[in-house]
Image (cartoon, helix red, strand yellow):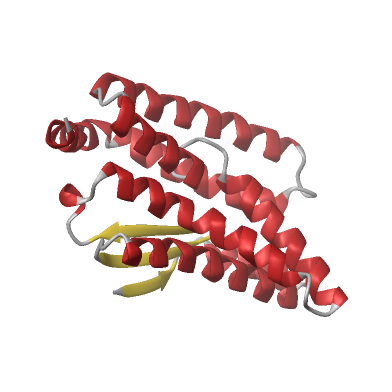
Length: 203
């Protein structure tokens, strides 16, 4: 399994260096790795083989070796793995020195809050998508959900841009989410064709 750092993490590092918060970024990076470890452990427990993992500004992107054979219930637990790990991390932070604990908890809470937003590509979106596969396996609903994710991420991006430069850190994260949502929407026909096959297999 390959683990990589996404290119958009680089401007995030520069922002932290220029603002004198490199140590703070180390906490962010640790939190992201911890969060992603939750997804990987969940995949391991579900017996799903992972091809690669890309660490992004909001968490990570996991690619399965054979996504066509991954059950919707496994997708649900894998998506839950990250938030569960983050919640555990928040709990463990209370046993750390106060200065470190305060920063770690604040980062973990932001990470959790961002990831549970129910849009693709976030964990909340993956959870909702898995729920659709389980309860309403229809390609039209999935396509509508991709469109809704793109619209919501566009609105969030505009809101964060209105509050620059104070919102620069959040704007970088939302920009990445927007790019991922746009990519998912742009390639929706190919994804819907694949998901039709998955849904036919599941029903």
